Length: 499
Image 1 (cartoon, rainbow, N blue to C red):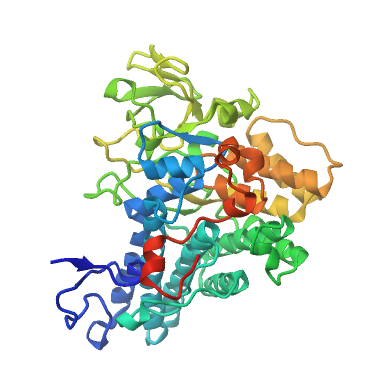
Image 2: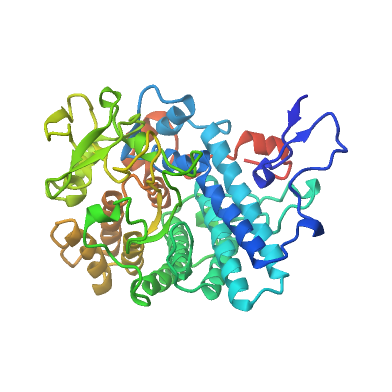
């Protein structure tokens, strides 16, 4: 029988038999499966978090956030959809974008289920607040991802209970979407405590995402980005709001801070390190990909199809998997680092060794691009590893604060703390606001490379064409580069959507 996907499968991820339209749809909530205990609600919250680990979602962070940028290229025989993203020719049929949209909304619907049910529960206030706070954060996180990728998207504010609810209306404008995102995050901030747990969000994560949201509005409107320029928000107020929430992260708690050791940040044994405000879950003991990770293999070169060793700063060696060399650091980006920048010398690999410490492959020989060591697990099991995408790091927030406050004493302080850790000299004072903020954007490229951030920085500053020659070659305009089109499948299924 032919299976028909109902409008916004993104909301449900369930199929219906087209031969029997009277069949009851699976997965809708009723009084029979309403949460009866906090354990039920906790399980549902974990179900919402688990959406992030879908392969298409987790890998989409990199395919979307890195490929269409100046720092990353893709291997020549990677799939057509990836080539589209890399060359700025992606259209509404692109599978990566379609799946990303879908899984964001699956997660949103799962969050809505938690919010609707827990809000109406009689759970103890402490338990209720934590469950709601995490669900509000996660819903906002998904919408923030959606708005940065696609611009205007539909808003689904409650869990789907019937087919009639699977065609939500498109947001009227970006103000509506960002008001919704920021409202959720402020609720999360008020409900949550500081409580670092791998794969989970806490109060600091909510404040950090609020800072990112306000900075995106401020810089996008200031830069005249299409649709953002029509927002009713005041640019200065948005920068001030970004500064307000990022300052809370930097000064109002002691759990999170800059790690003094760059390699320690990415040591798979320490996912609860001081920089990790929000990190994806995943462990090599998982049974299915998503529960474990293959992200490292996306960055590592093939080198004869066998594992190899890379050298550490203390002259020891780390065993790691070979890879598929999907994501390739562009030579221009690699060479943009100062030769003394530890983010190049300590975190980019140019030599590969065997067990005796002998070089078996070098940059320019068996592999043509330096590769990042941010996703290395020396205790990998076959292709299974515990490496995790870094969703929000402390240094990201430090740079948000610097950009928001501009060339002030505090702005220079936090920008230069990042540079000092990298072994670079501090930037001198006296910059204009524009030049200082441009310097922060460049610092973000070096600091957050290969973490799924670069595209969004290029977009919010309206510098895609300035930075990425592939965008210029594609003939795309800066306005077209600001957002990807909504997936055609969703437009076809939901008459409330339009590109």
